[in-house]
Length: 253
Length: 168
Image (cartoon, rainbow over all chains, first blue to last red; front, side):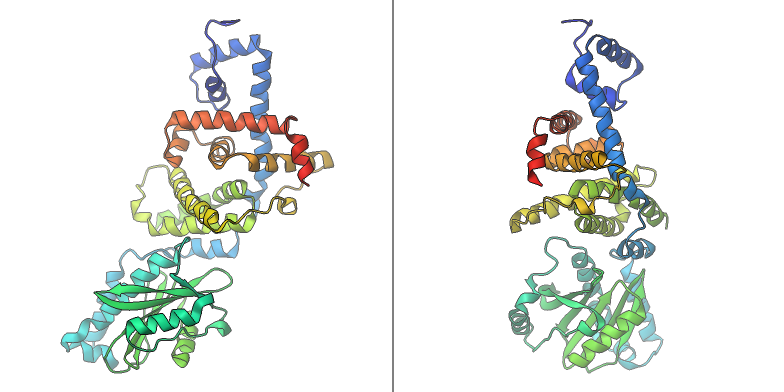
């Protein structure tokens, strides 16, 4: 070919720019470039592209992180917990420890695992869907009436999506979920920072209970039974902020 | 819990890449947030001692694909001109023009070329790492890179630059 021993191809020129060549190949390209100014110009253009990209975007490295990312990063496990079963175990302990209320009663009752079997799918569904980008909900909040009517029909009881606006959370929507072969419902809420909480609902004929609380790895859960429905409110948030939402839900339901 | 520290350390670069990829700062931070959430959820899949940065970029790439698909479905278009939101505060008007041109020229590239140009040219990933992130052969990465850079050069050096300017 013209000028050099070997023709230097396009891809080699790029590899040269990116430091992907060994010494020998680099030397070969340099010989080529000394005889092909048009390729040398191209290489310089590619190199200045990289410099320009850094000039343009490097300032972002210095920006303070937005709050949403900061809290996410500071909170070790806003993802699905590594060992949610440990919470379940803790609940059972609490139950057998005679903490009072429905857990203690359940603990000696064969129907006992209620708390565990409620928390487990509720947290599982929470973990799966709060991080969902594409389809966090099946039916969106703009069809709330339809959503509530549909879920009530499937659960066989009147369910409601409580209004959490005064705590800054708006309904995103909801979905129907299988819970050991029975239907369960999940409502998802989101605040302005994009923090999401879910309310898991399924029918439960147990007696009404007070709030119970469980937390691990940054995920908090309040759960209770009211009017033949069991509820679990789950959030990657502190006890206090979730408690406010739980109260609102309880009053509304 | 080492992995969170690792993720925190990479956040600025994830943000830089996301912003360069999407231009819209809000969408970019959404992308980073989804990526981090997913990384935390999948942290058990991370092998200690392997390249965390490449792992995070891989997750981000997958999240981005999903977002892009969603956008296609809802036929959303990205606002063309967001010059006001560009991160750099360039010293002169001429520079400002060039900076805006670069951002716009980038936008003209197909996603697959822009990704490679940014991963290699801005993030300094090797061809092999880039191939791993994009789940593509190294040869494909190289040819996308060559096409992307050449198109950028053409856009910035005149062929097409007048057309670009007319947009504003």
